[in-house]
Length: 199
Image (cartoon, rainbow, N blue to C red; front, side, top):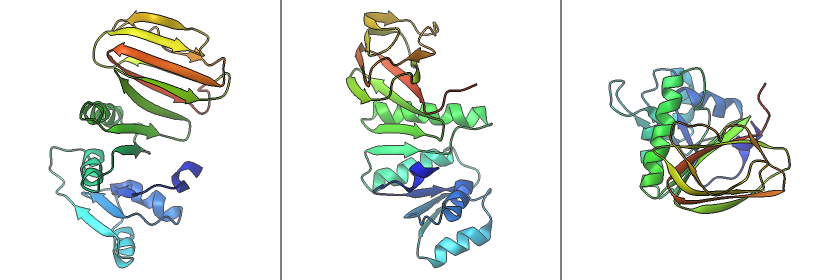
C-alpha cells in the first residue's frame, strides 16, 4: 500500500478503514463514518491526536464513502481518490462506482486507487495517460452508448467508434505504447487500469 503514503492535501479516514491508517502510522485530517466497524480505542487514539471526528448515525441514506466525499468537498477538494473500497461486498463496490459517476457529473474528478488496479471515469473529454507497454485496461460505457470513441496506443485501437451500453467489447485491451489516449466525443466511460495483471 505504498500509494497511501504519497502526498495528498487532505487525508480522510473512513470508518473501519481508519485501522489501516493507524497500522501505517498515518494521521488523517478527518475521520468520517458511523464507526460501527472500528475499534473505539482506535477512534480514541486519533481523537487524542486532535483529529477532527465526524460521526454519523448508523441509519442513514449515504454510504460512508459518500459522507467522506461530502466532507472533502467542504474542504474544497475537486480531485477525490478512494482506496480500500473495492472488496467482497459487491453492493458497496457498485455503490462507490455510482457515487463516482455522480461526482463526475457534478464537475469533480473521482478515482479509485487500489493495490492491483485503478478506476476512473471520463465524460465528453480526452486525456493522455503515461503508462508502460503491456498494461491491461478495460474501457466500458457507464450510463448509455458512447459515440465518437477513439483509443490510441492500445492493441485494439478505435477511431470515432460507437461502443453500445451492454456490449462489453472493451474488456482486456493492452497498451502497446508508453502513452495512451482516450477521446470521447459523446458519452461516459469507466476505465479499469490494472497495476498487476489479474489471474
